[in-house]
Length: 347
Image (cartoon, rainbow, N blue to C red):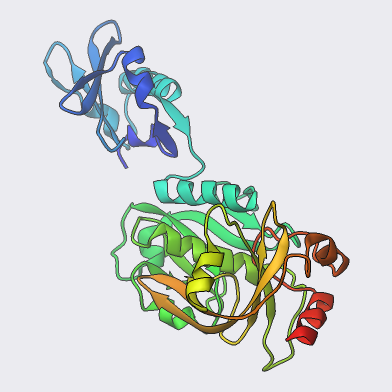
């Protein structure tokens, strides 16, 4: 890692603030120069189009780069003073022109924002000795469903030689039946730090698509969360998931075809029964489907639904669902035993 890069880890550039600070844009690169140490040296800092920061110290009298500050071995007092003065400039740039990020990689930060938006789950730091490690927990029982850490790439990807490259990794719990299939794909690795029989690791370097990762995150969250109803062995599970008609016209789709393909949700398996709850302003259980297949398509887990039953909206409105133990449907969840009994009686 370069000396300059260490000042901008886990930071995102605020492009609109660069000109006010004194940066000048030339050929898509932002440049900033500042004399220091009584004019003996000049700090030259560049911010590339991708947000990467480069810099150097130039000896003004000699008009050539001053490299002594980059030496890691013990150096004299003069070099320390030059390095400290240059560090002060880098710190000012970082404070004025960059925003703190939770993680070093853009992909990790995007996923954290999506978790917050979709689930309202906030991260916490469980390890005192590894303060940068972050976990996301199920709000129902506080069990982890995701662990993000920064490690050397070769600790996860054993085919890579030892190096100083540090990457963000994500550990998630997965269905043991699909674990071997995922490990055959690029970007997926045997779990680092967690059980290798039910967890896997993803290097967050844009190799694996955000949507596939978030699907797996959602499934991991469901796997660690308490279950409202568990079917007996070899019996189907009963699920209920929300659908917003403002975003997706499910009525039209089912009117045209009783078979539909959706993104896979939670721990739903082929053969399970799934109820579809229509969100506000309707707020009622309207459809019952059977999951005929769960499969992978274009790096995304999908499921095939077969429509079994359509209820009028006054059959299972939210008030009745509450009486049956379903107080809210914010995401995929198992039906309560009382609701399962009602659905079974009708089917």
